[in-house]
Length: 293
Image (tube, rainbow, N blue to C red; front, side):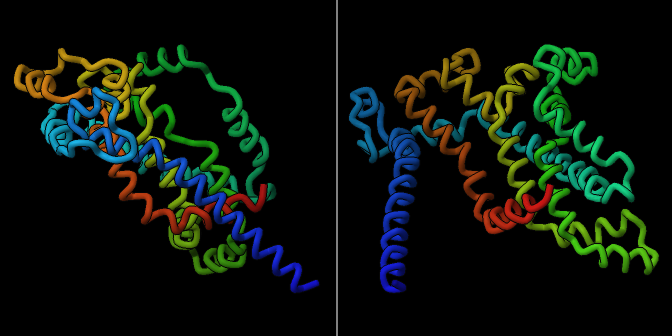
């Protein structure tokens, strides 16, 4: 029986590995196609000859993209948004999750606060009230319109407070006996012990801010677009009003699909570089942060 069970497990692992490998390859095909488009010349792209490898290899689309002022301006806006927004997100989540992780006899009406937060995950004020609020606070066309409306993510709060509840209470009691207050206990005990969860939240925040485009479209003007909003606008329609004469002449020698593909690849590189450093914390953070309710 043990031999048969081991044989079944072996074949299950083999089939599972084949299935996951095939799924990963299917997910990579669109990305490989975009890379191939960005490295192919105008005639090959116009002729529909580019599939999964470059045809008539050229770096010209990347050279054009890296010299565009509008691209780097939007790249700078997104970089500023990620640095300010992700930092603000993580700090506020840490400060909010800590008191909510306490039992009811230490924080009265704890469940009321948690349910109020959970309610905001199901319902929100709507697009028009949010826009009116941002406008009345004079935040339109500023970086704060991109980072303040979503400064506290309830999902991340729940993830971190569940992680905090796994920290042994004896550590907090020992710190209290040594004269530590809540702030010192938080930063010297809870934060160091919850680095996997914090790294996971940081990854969520960085990717969320980097990929966000809709709020940039409704809150910001064209010359202050974040990167993904800028890419979304050029994918739908190339804006020739933002080009000077030399840029227009260079674009005439290229295919707009190659240029768009090159900009997408350049925009994806920072996240591809950051993710491997945080990925090792990701699984542990999700698992440990979802144990308790």
